[in-house]
Length: 270
Ligand code: IPD
Ligand code: CA
Ligand code: CA
Image (cartoon, rainbow, N blue to C red; front, side):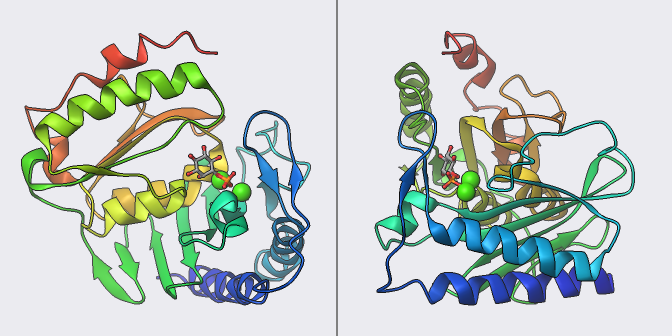
């Protein structure tokens, strides 16, 4: 793995120390736009810390981050290095003192995801990958499950932002429930992708995620032999928010998968 990625791993661990230090302190919870969308003073603190710290690693990198004010892909981001950061993914869990909540750092090179680091401070799990170099959990090589749907559990997002997306997502979850060993919802998109990458879950679907919610985990999953697409099976644009279907190697080949595109088409998009 490139020295840059090792330094990003170290930065993610340092961010995790800030998150761990929050325990028992005033979190400063504020509402953002939309339903159940929160930010705490720790989200802002970690974003600021990482912007400074990662600039030491790649001085001319550009930045896109959930809490940075620069939260969309802009002209110029297709060239060179771009960090795509979610300082705390799983903020609602963090507020309720529940695991998982993670720090997520994606690194794009010339407009495409090139490396990803996800750190879960409560369980001290560090997931990382670099394009072409495999995926790792705490330094140990990981691979997604080679088994099919009937041998796996599924992960699903809760679509807290929209009741109509929630209703469609529940229908798809029911279709999976019939064919798999059950489903779970963890509350952190990046952690879910790492759970699929490491073979603990077979797949994960969510109807709307920000770029920072899957920038790191997509590289980790693909390097672990999995696949990430939109609901119709198309490659992601990596330019804006997306619905995502993340599958382990076994599910990507399973002929008993529900037609996720048909469920997507039921959603009114609101
Ligand atoms: C959220 C989490 C959650 C997903 C939401 C995301 P945040 O990110 O990843 O699992 O269901 O759509 O917004 O707000 O905790 O960074
Ligand atoms: Ca997030
Ligand atoms: Ca966040």
